Amino acid sequence: MSKKNDKIKLRYGENPNQSAYLINNSKKSVFDYQISGKKISYNNLIDIDSGLRCLTEFNEPTSIIIKHTNPCGVASAKKIETAFLRSYRSDPKSAFGGIIFVNRRINLLLAKKIFKNFFEMVVAPNFDRDAFNLLRQKKGLILLKIPNIKKQTIDYKSTLFGELYQTNDLTPINKNFINLVSNLKTSPSLIDDLIFSLKVAKHLKSNAIVLSKNKQTVGLGHGQTNRVDALTFAINNKNLYFKNKKFVCASDGFFPFTDSINILNKNGCRVIAQPGGSINDKKVILFSKKNKISLYFIKNRLFKH
Image 1 (cartoon, rainbow, N blue to C red):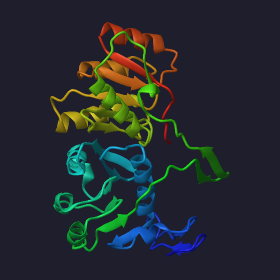
Image 2: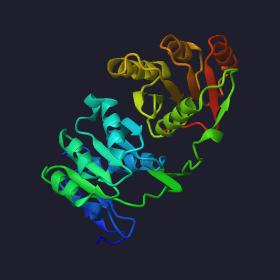
Image 3: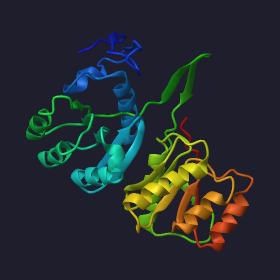
């Protein structure tokens, strides 16, 4: 077991020409949770942090596949095996070489599904013995057993001007987080999808767009420098893998114009959540009413930079 404030040297940083190390700030380091696979890298550590933070949003069986710190597929279901398959099918191309995070024990059935494809790492609260024995056959596959994930109250990052600190946003994302601002209410199941989408949007790089159906992401847009491009990217993904599927949309920032909501309307989206706060809120609300869209404003903005 590692000691608190240990300085642990890593193979290299983001690129092979960069040196790197981890200063452990707890009684156990991430390396103490590793039960199989190759050595954990600098980039792995950042991805683990991102995936676990997102996973804490969900209580029901949920699978998240992380690629370069962003979720590329997320799904919740009654069974964890179903959740994993649906998270993978959200974007199988991006899932290649990704990192799987699940909030339930991995059994043999799930292990067999994971074994069929190439992943960098699997993070779970526990593994059945036969599931572990199967997955460990892939020598390069990193397996981490991390139970009892806790949300952090303070977040910080290093800048050229010093360390920035902020309180983490621990506001529960539930039915009290959204408020209908157009005339048309939607169904309880679509409200659940909207809440699911907002939980994912919180952990995507801005501009974040999450399209989902039946608690499965069907299109994600993030990291673009404008919201229209992020939305277009998400819709293109949706049309590639889920051509005729209806969906809801969550945005981490407001729609400053009617262009984004017009694109969603043309693509059959009738349920949307965004924070509001634009000088054009009234125009967006009026557009929603005219086109029979259920538009919800959210309690807090969900930017992640």
